[in-house]
Length: 228
Image (cartoon, rainbow, N blue to C red; front, side, top):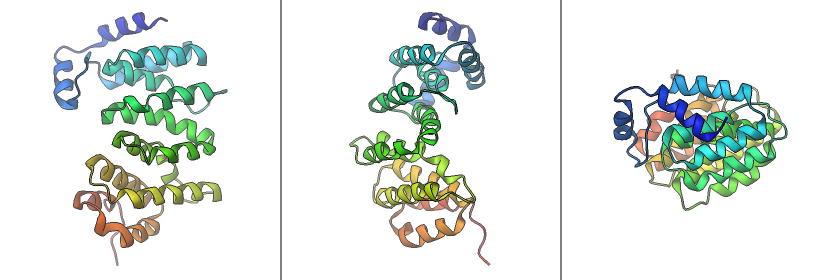
């Protein structure tokens, strides 16, 4: 399937009037076709099932280059899959998108694909650490979003705990960043971790909460168990 044929398919899935609402909501100047997310999910699933990894990677690259909102979301969804082997080319493509990140929805879609590749090869955490010193707050934020799988374990393996602690170290530096999206990314990470390791989140907040914005503290504590 060619990029042009996929874009034509997106046009048939558009809902009247939706594109205008999306443009107003996301507030980033680009083309919005007006396709609802469930339809994008269905199309991505169909393409993942019918195309090889190489074909999907090439298609994802081409769709990303269009800078169309749904094209970029679909590009990420094409590569969001736990088992991809070999996956070096997929990882390179996902990381090549970092300088283009400019909206939370596209960034989250891209980093959801990245999460699968990090879990498949945890050594990639060394590369991700470099993102934390980027001048772009979107790339700094991406380091938190792509590592979210390491908030999910009730009983992490030693290597998973090591990554968890490494990211919490990044978060400790991020709490001094006034950028809203950075504060939000720290809060998101802590909120998800609190469902599985509330004691660790409580310890983090005891040390770093004073530097966090009030909204971020509140979000981080959203799922914390009530104190006795």
